[in-house]
Length: 252
Ligand SMILES: [Zn+2]
Image 1 (cartoon, rainbow, N blue to C red):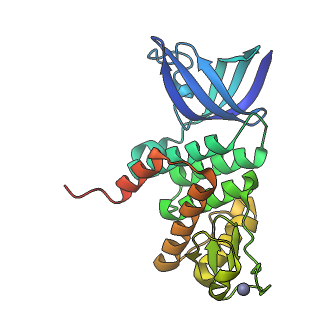
Image 2 (image 1 turned 45 degrees about the vertical axis):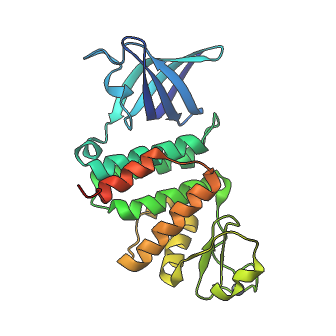
Image 3 (image 1 turned 30 degrees about the horizontal axis):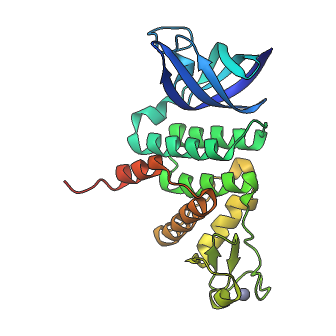
């Protein structure tokens, strides 16, 4: 059976002499593992479309449980990513996060988010420091981990006072209401970061990156979002460690 779909390559692995095994996020069928024959051959017809974070129109051939890439027409290479190690390493980490959260079910909102993220990092001046928590929290929200950000679950106050995020419970609560929740770490947000989180989680998709934050609340949002990711995925991301190294290189 042939499947025609738009697709974004999330990850590549080398296979045999000249092939690749690609993990792709497709618009029509969700996440797929695809063999791209001859993709490592210089100038091969599948070479350009088989690079990580390249967006293409693909024709896949599915036979029982195997899927191969038959044809591909590149729509966007997001070339700007490949000129900046910080932006590239962030996109690679976010693609891995998307891979961990996706399965073989189409999700147009997630597909659109990943394209918008690549676009923002490759083609705009948006700071990676802002794109990171926005994509993390939007992606987790779309995948079933949307936090409650409006009302404290302990006292019912809207908005919560001196707000903090409790990642494991997925709630924003008042600082003084901490004892009313189960154990687990809470992180301070403050009102500016809570409003940014509200915009990220509840706002329009196309305006996701249309917010600004001063350095201090952005640092609070960044710490809260990253802890939220690690609390719900319950695994490490070596690509996240690498991204941190590009932002803060270790001292020689
Ligand atoms: Zn409260």
